[in-house]
Length: 269
Image (tube, rainbow, N blue to C red):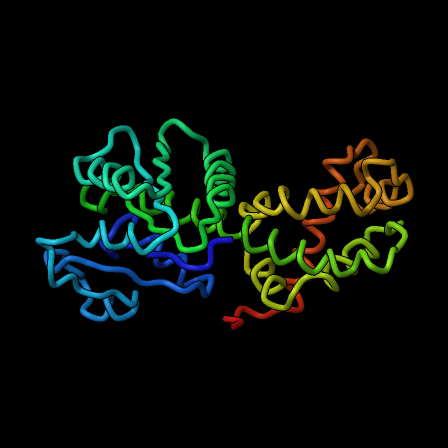
């Protein structure tokens, strides 16, 4: 599970990565070079950045790569010379590195691939690099949305399954109504995860379908045919031919709506 993000903080992909960390209350920081100019003097303090005073030995990018469990490079089209150097350093230092071309990969598919890569290499501290805003004026927005989805996937899935394993000690029958299904999910989710889900947008909800959706399938009897729960979701959604996947969507959307009513926008630590 990704719990810390490092970058040089430059406006663009690197800055977007640290904004995600701030928004989701993740540990963050990194090395930055003295030639990187910030529009606001307080930016380097906000991002918890350290000025690299020995660029002749290692650049800030290389120091961040060494300090992280893995490096994610986000780009569109062609890699710049700087990003190719980061790839080379990853090979030299034998560090996991994933270069993701967002021009060739759909956003949610990219999020799934990054999430799987991070899990495969046990990446908890992730270094993020990419073009500056000057090099690519639009990529920082896509990068921020993508990284939020990746963190949602890992955070909710890891914490939820951890709590769910404790609950399996006392075997419960699958819920037979939409209300019971949502109530069980809320009781299993830690407070921090409830707040995160409440503050997600509708467009971000598909990020929950992998981990949370798998749990619903397995533990709510959808694989074995929980006809009572299926019928309840069909009645509530007024969709007579709702499939198992559709039931998962309805449960997650209903969970989200209820949490938005009970969890104010705030930072939970």
